[in-house]
Length: 79
Ligand SMILES: [Zn+2]
Image 1 (cartoon, helix red, strand yellow):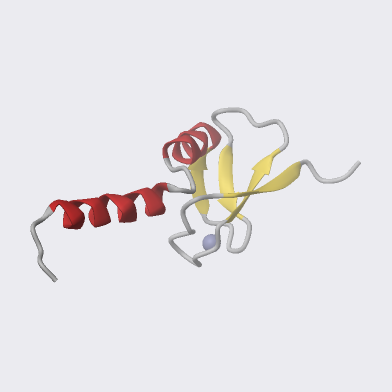
Image 2: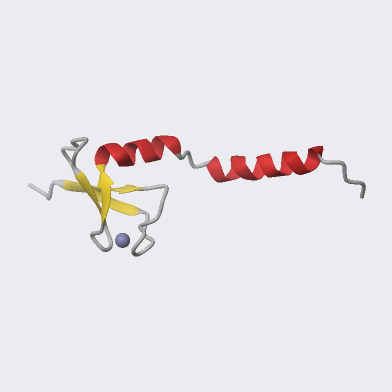
């Protein structure tokens, strides 16, 4: 039997070391604590991390950029 943990990539970095990798139990109970795989800081409960992943799609930054560009495009600016 191997160890009962696996790694996962989070959209947000660890506040302590900046790593996006977290280690979680294979069981994946919603109340399981998830740890940073680099420095073992507790990142939160598995249920919380799932919400975070769902609420932060990878394209979020790009969407925000597009929004800014669109707003600028609507503003009257003669070049
Ligand atoms: Zn860390």
